[in-house]
Length: 231
Image 1 (cartoon, rainbow, N blue to C red):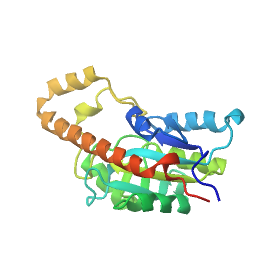
Image 2: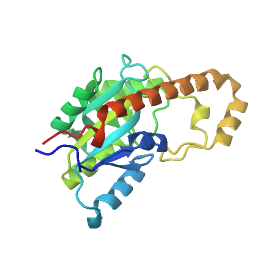
Image 3: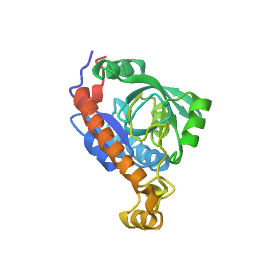
Image 4: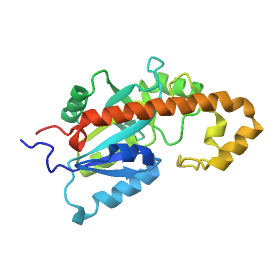
């Protein structure tokens, strides 16, 4: 049996603020955003023989809600991830350890998407067709890399934009195809051309604040090596 001491896990995150929260003893972060960046960066890390052995890969960060019952700030621990190559199951021991440390977290499937889900209609359709309760742009790349390299995989994501909220178009202005956060100037220009989006943008900003707070709380509960279970 081994505990978290000396364990090294890879934390896959979409944005730098998520990686900053995930960082800690026993954790090396890989940051996107988007599946293509994640796949390439994981490839570089995992194929580097000099880097040594990794215990597993955890997808950690925020997600878009698909299940209307999940409000902003809800924590989801994945039982599996739906990928273009089919579902990938999460490691049951690691998943159980995460759930034990995160009371109130929802054990359910995540859906991997290649682009942001901007509308309520798009979220509703994916929920109906997939059964996943939330979606993000990194978990499927992380799950497939873990399967390819024979590593345990788990995911812990906090809902940022709930199923019933569409993301205002101005928030996506200037975003690149991989989902990188847009610079401020294009956002302000888009908002100036459609000032009616201001209320939606403010609501999204509040959601982001709540999600970040809950992500920090989850990280504190997970402890060293992101809840890696004793084996």
